[in-house]
Length: 109
Picture 1 (tube, one colour):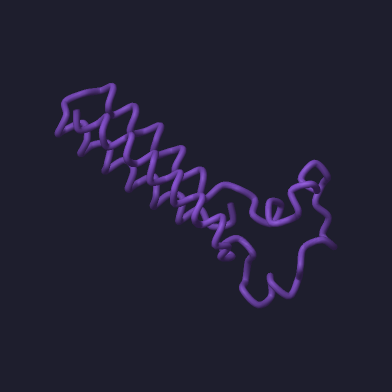
Picture 2 (cartoon, helix red, strand yellow):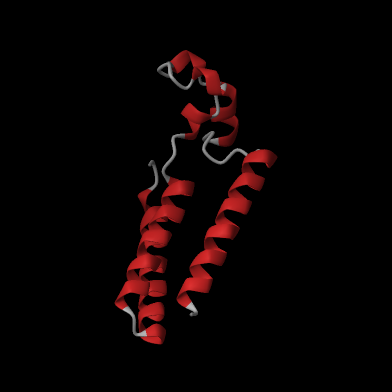
């Protein structure tokens, strides 16, 4: 990951959420669940190599060469990391909403 500041900020926010959950529920198990769910959520957004996955899915088994990266996108946007794709955004939204719902129902029990 190029910018570790975002990752650190997310981990700090996760630590605050874990402390709040632990204080309100008095349950170490719920704190651990919150920790692992939070790490999975942060990792799913910040850690993937988007330059690799923005290719045709049938090409994912082959290494990425420098020539395959579209330099005009990199120069125009600074990075291809946060390109907006509606289908990917909808899938992420559904998966994260379901995960958050399941986590919330578990923690509030």
